[in-house]
Image (tube, rainbow, N blue to C red):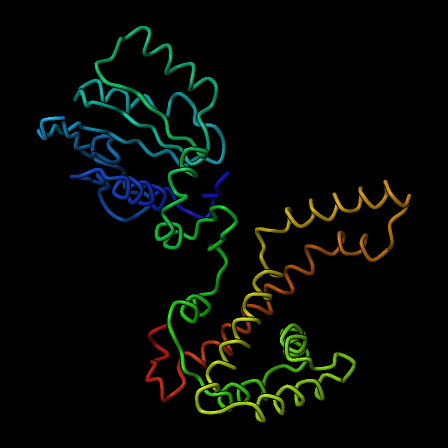
Length: 321
């Protein structure tokens, strides 16, 4: 199920517009009066579009579609689709599509069936509920990226803008510039963020925080050259961003909790008991995730941002504000 809760009603309508365009409709007209969330659609309309149908003789026919977007946390009630049905009854499109961010309530579904039975409308009535929207968005990565939508485990909602800026362009940063930033960074946060980097560069975790960091710097200083310098920076930053985002992914709290509880049940079945470490890990998920989310954003805002604006790259800080 796709989570659209971070979108306003107007943003959800615009998302629907983007999907309709991506799926090959033409003459797409979003009938919103203004960009404000309080702005009503013209005459009850949300979106109008044409679907081009090509016949076997290459002739084409335009089929008129009306789209009504409903952004609800729960099921859409019957009263919310009456205006759309009246609009379609008056103008007779080929099809009326009711799009909902969640689902239609059972009374609403019953109302549609009764409407079809009693009125025999000259137009088709279709519904795009959350599950179908998920299927429609699977191949639309640009739309998911734009609206920060999580599809198939790829979550864009909480990715920091400097993280996105870093991974979507090539950078040639110098290790001296990176370490100059990290030298002045909070030593406790730095040590936790660099833990996987230390592991990959065979830096002993038995050393103290300062010693580990200096050991990493010395290792890279001995092995870098003009060509490898930016590669070292990219490896370090990519490693930190990947793990920090993973550990601080707020949307994954429940999934992590479910996996650990499943593991706990299996361990209990085999051993009859569970050690305190696993129990503590389950109980501390919220606190741990929030902590890493804070570390992740702090690193993006204070380290990655400076890397994006390293002078010789001619990057302007204001470009990413």
